[in-house]
Amino acid sequence: MKIYIGADHNGFNDKAAIIDYLRGLGHEVVDDGDRELDPDDDFPVFASNVARSVLDEHSPDTKGILLCGSGQGVCMAANRFKGIRASLCWDEDEARSSRADDDANVLCLSSRKFDMEHIKHLIDTWLNTPFAAEHRFIRRIDELDKLG
Image (cartoon, rainbow, N blue to C red; front, side):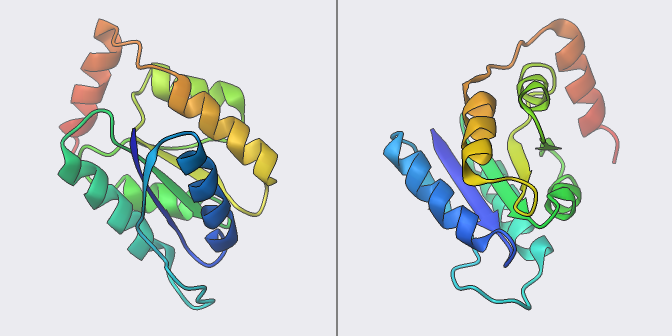
């Protein structure tokens, strides 16, 4: 699977560990920034990079992962892009349902609240949960894309 990943200064160190982890699992991982730790960087830049990269791939197998302090900012920014379904996940149930019910294509995580073991667990759950593709879920995703 191809995975784009981005993080601001809050998630910078976790991003490096996640990249190593995902590559160790055999995934193709693209670092969409920040490439250097910059305490003055802004999360919308990296959310935009990842969202655009996921959309440009035109593949349902391409995913994105974003990190910032709370996870909220990158989630809000990524969801500004039509076709992006970014989900902020705090536990396994959210990770599973965001994929199974909503076909989330970007996972957003808090770098302040989680240790790396919890982050890995959320990522594994999210990546290994297939979209259920039930009619009502497909209909709802279509409705999202028509919102504006």
